[in-house]
Amino acid sequence: GATIGILGGGQLGRMLSVAASRLGLRAHIYDPSPQPPAGEVAAKVTTAAWDDTVALRAFAAAVDVITYEFENIPTATLDLLDPLRPIRPGRLALAVSQDRVTEKEFLHGLGLSVAPFAPVNSLDDLNAALDSIPAPGILKTRRMGYDGKGQARIMDAADAPDAWAAMADAPAVLEGFISFSHEVSVIVARGLNGEVACYDPGENVHDGGILRTTTVPARLSTAQRTDAVILAGRIANALDYVGVMGVELFVTSRGLIVNEIAPRVHNSGHWTQNGCAVDQFEQHIRAVAGWPLGDGGRYADVVMENLIGDDMDRVPALAREANVALHLYGKPERRAGRKMGHANRIVAAKG
Ligand code: ATP
Ligand code: MG
Ligand code: MG
Image 1 (spheres, rainbow, N blue to C red):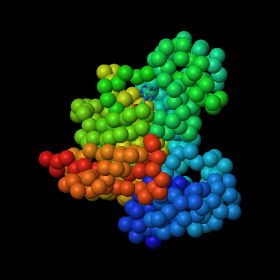
Image 2: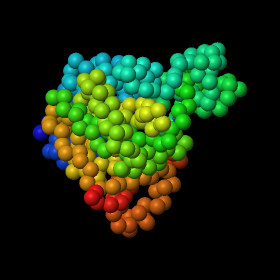
Image 3: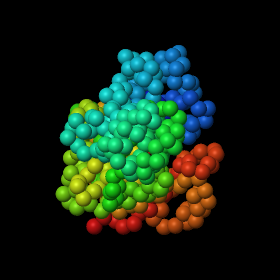
Image 4: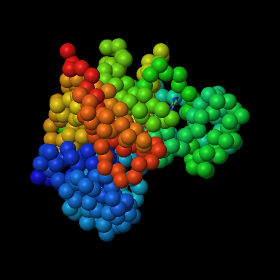
């Protein structure tokens, strides 16, 4: 079978490796950290820095296709790998999603709604931006943020100096605060031949910028559900996307507003492991390996709950519960705010 090269060996790389193995393929992880969670389950692991050209060349030579579990791979790393092996999803998806401004311009260009936004490179910029996008708002670093890191809330203009200081001189973007009724996401898959399959949208609850739970089905009308999957499919087509992508949406009285896209398997798609015949991880491996997409139809109502930090104390109790599937990442060190695993609770078989 083919070997799938995966950049990044966190929990997403780990679950991708399991899926590859189940399809008779081999996963080869590349990660700078010595004991990545994916390391225990992948067929092979390379521990080397993102700028280790010798290790990168050897990695490319050992794999048939390259994918990734996070979007912040350095550009120089991708430039080196690009001519050697196909990178799926491709460079365009990465370039667009690595920078929140590029991403919003791209989405706006597709005719989709996004939060009002303005690039911010100084406190003067921020004060000027607050004239056209009045508080409340959120200042975010343009690059590298995840789980709500690199963000500062601006409740009124007086918060500007503190918010700018929190960016530590990194290029930032001011976003107007969207008053949404709830948040949903679409996990969309696109195959090498352009076929598209969307999972049923999930409803997401965040706490302090970090995902707590995803519930399927989401509270959406039939029309909203259609809007959500069509816009996700349009984004995937426009990027000539191959693989699985997460599209985060705000549900508002003025329609769906796109928060951000993630060019990879997504935390809000973990419910598919126990709600669908083919989950997002298998779907992603199928897509990047050039296989037909699988059946992502949902057969159960599921609540996915992230196990963060001390939530791990609940594992023994969860392990005794009926209709709960545990997915633990084998991370050696527990830390506050660190995703250690998740539990998928099957609430009902789908009628
Ligand atoms: P992820 O781990 O999903 O990549 P992130 O660090 O990129 O997170 P965002 O998705 O930008 O962060 O924001 C995290 C959460 O903060 C959102 O899911 C939403 O609840 C809230 N949020 C972000 N931007 C806005 C906004 N413009 N208006 C209202 N709420 C927002
Ligand atoms: Mg994000
Ligand atoms: Mg997000």
